[in-house]
Amino acid sequence: MDNETLQGHWNSVSEVIERWIEERRELLVKYCELTEVTDFSDPENNYDAELQQFCEIMVDYISVGHFEVFEQITKEAEIFGNDQGLDKSPELIEKIQITTELILDFNDKYITAKDLDALIIDLAALGETFVQRFADEDALIDILHSTNVSKLIGETEPNSI
Image (cartoon, rainbow, N blue to C red; front, side):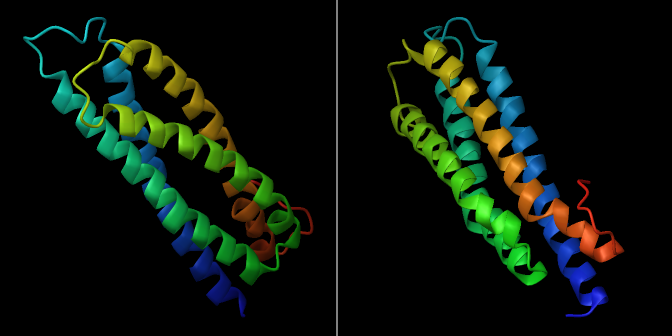
């Protein structure tokens, strides 16, 4: 593949990642809004709708990660011959999958929940899950995507962008 084609592919994947990171920001904003609530039993507020919207954004974010971003960066690593990144990625993907299961458990519990007594505690645990997941996702992007820029600019040592 010529350098121009590689550059186009790399840029395309970068755009997918940027859109996904924007979805992450939206997810975090909704998460922070929910964590500011101290009493979910207040009948004057419609926390059920906010929680449902948060769960939908969260599941969408996870889905785009697994079925678009991870697939695209893995394909890119194969195209660029990034064997080192491909060798390291299964461990990160396994760690991400563990957080996926925890997040989906939260979603299953609260997508239609009427009993919100444990929500504050569960949100705190979910926050810890997000921290781990986002670190692993960023590491995966770094080893499968960002390091490929060195091949585009002709360097021998990979750089992160």
